[in-house]
Length: 333
Image (cartoon, rainbow, N blue to C red; front, side, top):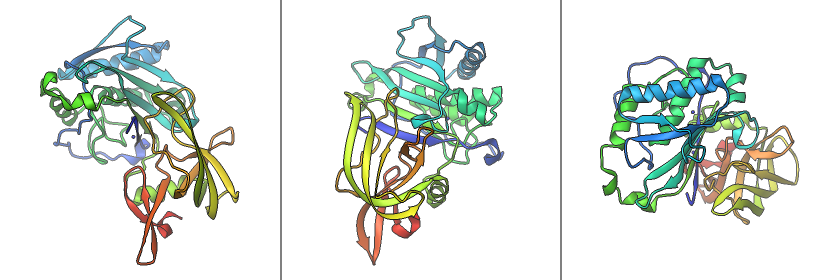
């Protein structure tokens, strides 16, 4: 607005990439999180009057729907909160917003806390107006209460490529579905009670061949090789980020180094949900970009990783770790 803890990398495109269409009738998909009741309170960490207004308008939009009631609290220790950051590196590279589900759980596995973020730097860079920023905030609140992304092309605030759409009937229907079952009967939630981070980017990398083509275009470096080292930087149980070292066998684009070190989703300040960790000995194709400090990272938090699986009809086949699609080596460079 993407397992022990799992990283879901999700996307937004510029306004010009979303065309008007007929209303979407199917309910917006749900994620595995929900509060015990169809209401929750959150603490607003934003000190900016402008962004406090945006979060307030987003709250009012959800409350007007009468499907879920958000209220504010003055309790600074609240496990549910709304805030903003201004960052352009690491997991925040081109991220317009973020939702962190599962900041806390009750004994039955119902969520008791969720973090909702807007990234001021990227929203400003791509000239989102106040209404569009509010739409992103409504989107993040939707993730927090239990909604996943709607289909690409849907007319929905939860469209992964949304910038212009406010809350729609399909989103309200989806939220009703989340809370149509009494919390006490959702036994499966207890075993699934693990935090999940959803990052919403400015680029739309759809999980199909077009998406891979776009990643290839945006990546500064594309190489194939063998992982020789994998170092997790974490405070258990949250994996903040992992440093990977690859011995390069093929250079397809960019850097000609014999070895490269890169990081995956996450930073020292933001835990990711177990983004796919590459292991020593695995043969991979990785698509990388550089942050302003000159450090390599996997483009779009894991979208640029492909693991060698097997050879078929003379083609070396690679599994896309983000959606498990299979691609030939030739399709990746």
